Length: 587
Image 1 (cartoon, one colour):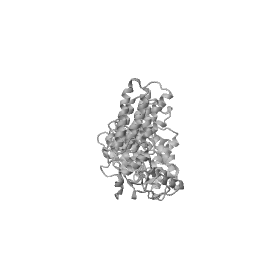
Image 2: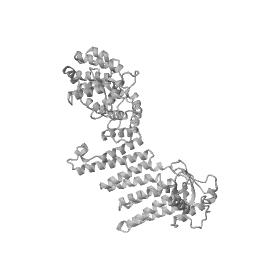
Image 3: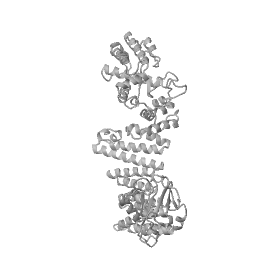
């Protein structure tokens, strides 16, 4: 552009050096466009005509020679000029609103990818080099909260949107991304970096932030010197949270997973690994048949590639589980271990499947009663097959976790389950029969000891009878105003009666007693009361509303069987479940 056209644009666009001077026709067209951007409303006919005149001027031979110094055209001339001008217009407030009347943001994003990809190498290099300068960096944050760069030697800007930072766009190296984060956006106070202003961009453009930070992360998850790791983490965490429901691209998710692990952010590491596993599971064989890891193994069939995807999904589920456990989210950890176990079982890797089932069971033992993890523990035991030592070990680990929580009934149930399985293994064990018998005896003795710890007889096989015994032994504690208190709950038994049916407690009557939750299941401290199973059956059969809540009564409002027995007999915590979490985790 000639100097006249440059001067006319300065109020809206930051000037750069000229490569050459196009025709006077282009100069007049640009002058008119600048006037219309300042005086016309978005979508007006006058502004549209001014844009069309600039398009026509750029498509002429002299204007086109000016453009092709900077770009390598990938479509016909008219289409390319229109993309370039739309990107340029979208860096001004009026221009962006005008453009949005005709082109979707998704289309503008695609244009950003295409335009940055067609920058000639020396122009791209100059754009990046300018980021290291104290002034005249050519970097801008628009009023639309997009990041834009000036095209060297021109007054044109490219709005990078989200696509400009993709692998198909600028495809920044770690060094280049670091330069960008430390660059000074023009028009901001001295000393301000792009990293400083990125928190304000997250709500509108989390993808751009996600990609920029991802490009700045090394193979080990670390950052280059000069970057404030906490500031980068804040931007990365906000972008990650905003995109938690979007799978995205494997190559973009992986760096952030490494970075969160490097920062010790276990929750987001776990979430990232879970998303990566989902991406692997959804990949079709042709999508990554040429992946480096597969290629190193030699020629691969489609079945080989599918198995590769499955195994990678299983590994990432396992890693997600490990980090969820470290983030004190045991149920999420258990869910990921279960998914991993199923994947490895389908792939024929019994050892990995068994280990993941076992870890899932142990995680559930830190937060749920025996009934919620019994099937998972049984799956682990079954996959271990004839490995009686492994069966015994996982049983002991889970029982120890329950005992640490004061749930001796759940601990006893685990030992009894293992005892039954070991008996089955012993009958066909041959030379190992004696060793298995010894383990059987040990688990049965431990089960009996746990019953004794809460004053119950292991010989009583009737759960309803055990519940009555537990209630009878604690009647004096129900007399207190605060009731029987456990970890996060209180059990009331006013007047030692079912307050709905008025049936009094009788240790010798064959009545079955259950717990009724008085409040919402989501309450931090739960309140229960004892009622008879007959009361429960009558309320459920009649479709009654909850006696204490303005909502229908549900089966989940009652707790029965060994779960109720555990709550009635639970002792004060001896140790936090965290004692059992990390050291033996399979990572």
